[in-house]
Length: 612
Ligand code: G6P
Image (cartoon, rainbow, N blue to C red; front, side):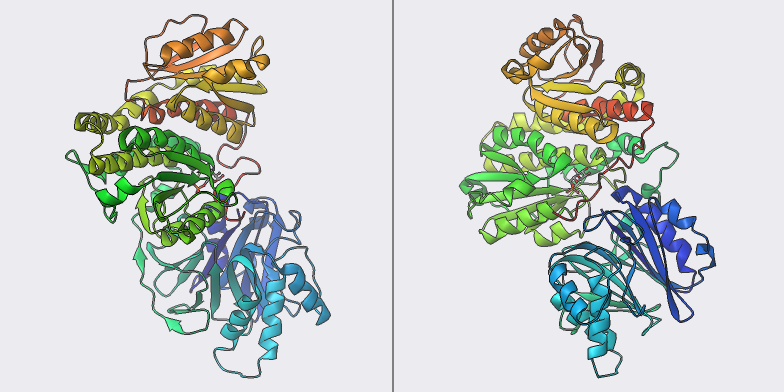
């Protein structure tokens, strides 16, 4: 989705802004633009398409201004075009604005401004903001140093919806103002310079010290100072936070694509995620204060998320139910928030979000809170919006995930959820300790087992080469193998644009088998020893109908008509998805490469979906 970058300092802003936008490319966008202050004027340069279309514009290298704002737009209101791309100016060209989010009442505001004589050049919701700023600035007869801030305050009072906004104005050429509500924005603090971004990785190479702005807060940035205000312009003090992520974690580091790099980072990500909580056989989770009594009283656990994060929840359901004996319902955040779910103070709601900024997941969390349930966020980003809303937060240690298709975040989420399930189970004392101890020792072996799988990727690459021209594929599994097959199928759709469906193997005869004909590709996941025989019977049914089968298994199965068998190391079926997803991630990756597609930035998709 849209990305924001800003700079104020003593260096030329343009290269820093463009570089920041390039680092935000992974978020998904269709146009890009920047504005700087050159002498006394705001200069805007923008273009449809990739950041390169912007950086190739003639005259852009003549920009020498040391203050500027920049944006990548993912079209919501108005088609992707140069006119609709940000920054937007007011009619007098004294205010430039970039905006992430949606102004829900922009029609009303636009009509109000048109009545006042303002003209509009774009079809965006954003263009009301610079014109409202101009309107309020000119309504204000007091000419003091807070005049611009008051215009921002009054404008924000009119806006309904979500926003992260950066503002430049010729009325104060050495200041930049930012404000946010329900849309991410961070400020990076440098020496005699400050940075703004919607996403930490974009400015990680410049600073590791960040301020996290909360909803309805306004920040006024100068070169050497940052002042924070609440929505009524009372000054507030905010702590600076240091981020551990290294700058290299947002670079490709020799890999062809971020996705391939992130697939290979999984052993480290899981080692760190697990290692932070499970030490010397003991699980300790800092900041969680769930007593045995609270857990015993729970009537249900909801796990709510979107996309891949929701798939991680589906895998973890088995651990919570088996070890804690509490019913678990896994739901899609956009459904959960509108279906009046049965929640009370005896329900624990767990929300998973890599970015911590997914609009539906945040809204679903707010809903549960309003119904009296305790909320727990699982995120990869410290200080992200969801972690600030939740009663409790725990973190994966995946590091920045840049490729749109999630890989290391998913496996880290599964690992962390399983650790959480074991942590609850130990408090509840409902299962034999040895069962938990066995799972602990199995999860510690996972990183090395992934390393083993990653040593030989040729077999998958070759199979991908054979089937990359197909139009449809099927993914089949039972139990946690079914849960992970949903993720395998999603990976394929996301980056190879091949239609695929995932089915519980037992459902095959209830419809989907009608689609199996000569040459159709089926990916079969079979890691659970107690279910493998049943799964093999299902696979034989597709083999006899001419399907090409890629089997992913940890069992010694007979290669009866299967085209390819990927052998995985053995582990507990509760965590086998962390292993079996690896060949499926690689399968999707190699197919995408064979088709010559952009693996890291698939069409129409955004890394972080910050609007509904
Ligand atoms: C987008 C991304 C997915 C991700 C989902 C949820 O659709 O492309 O990879 O799983 O959002 O994102 P979150 O940041 O909440 O985990």
